[in-house]
Length: 80
Image (cartoon, rainbow, N blue to C red; front, top):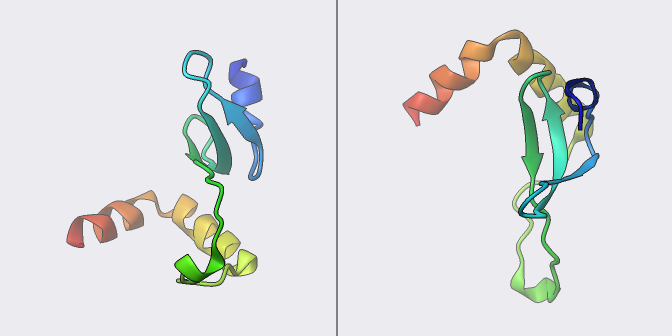
């Protein structure tokens, strides 16, 4: 992948590491740093609890605010 391709990654894109073949799903792109998540196959619904229902508008607004205030996350993370 080129640097330009990397900067163009967006939420939902599936990426794979060249040597390990580990696949991740892009969650957020900061340009030079990408937050990506692993996916797992989940079965047996009775073994799982829903912790929080996704609210994509809320998540978008929070990520937008965090990208404007990079120190907010660091400050909050260090307190917990």
